[in-house]
Image 1 (cartoon, rainbow, N blue to C red):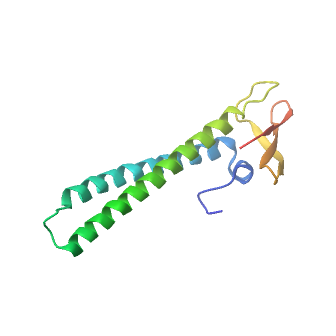
Image 2: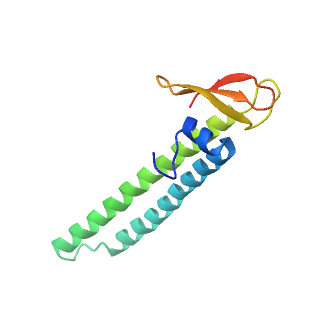
Length: 131
């Protein structure tokens, strides 16, 4: 993946769980900011639209309106996905034995259903995290 975005297993291996979690939330909130900017663009496109203007200008305004709406919906959906993914993973990052939060390392990953086998750094208990 890119320099900023890692998968769950790669992210925990390279960054550690807490840093991976922080980056997922940061990326999600960047999508939220894009949603807000798209809403502003949508309001400006609505303000510019005029029924008495020439057809080419109306089409341009309608295209701007559709583009802002599409980007806004995509970024809102992406924000919600990233937030839910990070929270669901964080809820599983607690060791069932010693209740240590986020102190884990990846031992194996199952490519079929993206299950990640992890091991607690404190007590060495093993469990799996589902995305």
